[in-house]
Image (cartoon, rainbow, N blue to C red; front, side, top):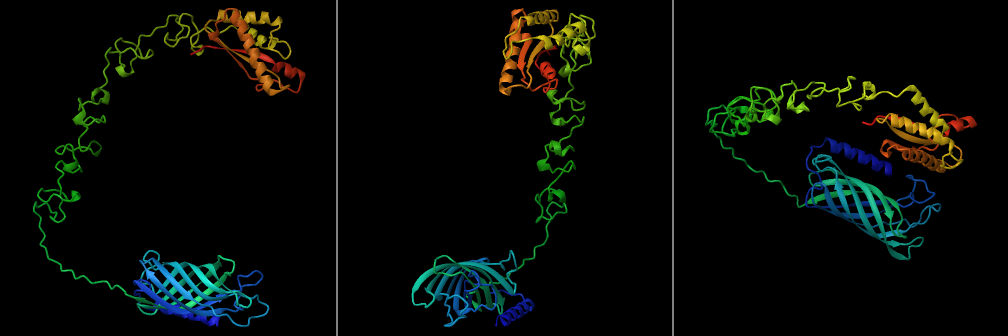
Length: 473
């Protein structure tokens, strides 16, 4: 029976595909249908395989659609399932669904967006809420109402403009205790009522003789400026200077110009239109109204780049007179020691003597503190005194005082200890007359080792206080 039904659906699909494409059922105000409902109550049950061998319950079904537009309809179904009095004993007992009213929404795919409205095969999707008056299994003597949610799809197979063979299938989810999940199939016919035939509007064409009032070759019907000769590119409006910009949008309609300047020219190409350029034939800058940047002191450096615009200077001095008091080749403006000769690599200051550098390196290894404390040992005073004398001898140098520890102990305590020891050296040098503004103290704990912390010798090297001299900008 099911194989015959499937073959029938295939034949109907083929017949529908070769029929003339006219309107299909579902595009009138109302559509009515009737036919047969079949339900498989067994396949969804646990432990039962889905298959055609499971018996079906059959019953009549009628429906009505209210068609709102080519896509959406509201559908009302009324059906009943008549169960067999005797079923296979191996199958579980099922309820009897005596009367089943259902209300739902239909979405038609032949809506002109997904498929053509005139297609002979008109598929649709639907979702309903069904209330069923149920006779409870196994004897169907106890009655109650249940609620289910049928979801499915169907096809209207066009027979005529107003008549279609209708098939559908889907799955109903039970929402209440007595309503059983089941698979359902329908077949029947559907007919359209109250179809609104499209009226044919007869159009009487009036023959109008073409007119070109301004004689520019663009007919008045298409001419945005019918009384002024123009060009076709601008719908008959003029472009007097032929610069490709119509007069109504051209700020200089009688002089050919550039689109970037709304049709005005830039004769000197300095990026300033002639209409706003005080020197239209000489390249200039906007700051001076399109005129060149002046060179007030005549030193060849324009005022905008001349640090001394009223005094003649040099390129080396950026427009200012070149001054080098210590004659070391570094201009005073860039020389951090303008009265002491020194190389440019050292910002014009004298470089530190090698023996002084060695003293600083020696200090890093020989400043001593009480164990686990930031208290300077007396032996460290002589070392710090030498550093103070170096800083006094080189007043143009500043220094950082960086405290370091080995990796032994708690990292947090090591960090705090390195900061405290750096500050102790800082305070001592201040007490020796070194300006606090020339020094910065910082601690780094064990984060910057210079030797292996796994050996006693390495740890001793890592416990250090470094002095790094620099010339401030």
